[in-house]
Image 1 (cartoon, one colour):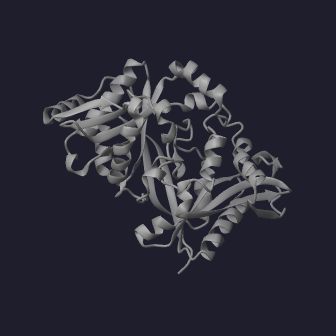
Image 2: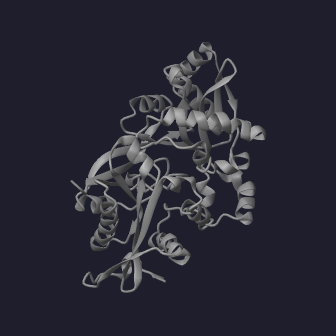
Image 3: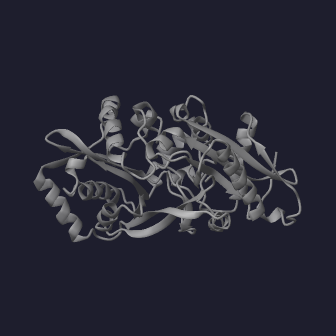
Length: 386
């Protein structure tokens, strides 16, 4: 299959063909298209092929309550775009609305191609009686959420996406409207921490909170409480649905957490010896992953071990705190401990988020670290059945 870059197409009179992904070869072509689209873009970093393939594997617990259809756009017998239509039936049940997603969207700078892809996803969702199309959401809201709205000159961080600016106009021209924005922040670790952060840390200590690292030698024991706490603390977050602990363990590389986790950056807050909160942060592994070209095998794993000390930035992904322990400055304490560790490693900065624009508490907490707004991502939706 031949891929078509933006510079190779100008004749909009050529017919656009939409093909459904039917086999493993089609799936590989679906996966590979962005490599051509972003070949001269230094900020895009590919998803690992194994991770991508495993997501669409029928054994993935996500598909026990979800379904999908993948489409590829061709023009002049060359691939010019792709899109996924996804229905999470459990989400529809949770919110009481027939909402389907579009995701994994990539397209050359040609609205006719984008329109054909959007229509394909929309028509499939309509055939399944969905009332609303929403996206981009790559199946779940915890990774690769939204089209990039600002920050096009900054590299994609781990578990977040990079998209070109023209995708925003594609969505708007297709009569999609903003439903939610998500913000990421950047903390300059070459600067001292604000005094208010240190004051809040002391308040949390005085309350009796203690911080410890994740114990990967007892990973299975740790994951028992962590998966339950993850589900408890995120159940009210926008777009999240209650799922099995098995499904949670299929996310974020949790199955490999014994080896992948950085214990001094995956922090646990305890009160009277019991875990009541956590912060999941990591080195900014994308600084290494960008050189792997979507491959993750034994050679790449060795490279991570050898080159890990070359990483000079971190990523604070998310914090979960039991409801009864909120407003105790625990988030500030967790942030502080992670950032101190990053500073000691010589990191120059850390990205945070993304954070729902309507989560005022999270925004207020992260600003106390001295963080500045860094990127914005937008999710769109459109009514498709009345």
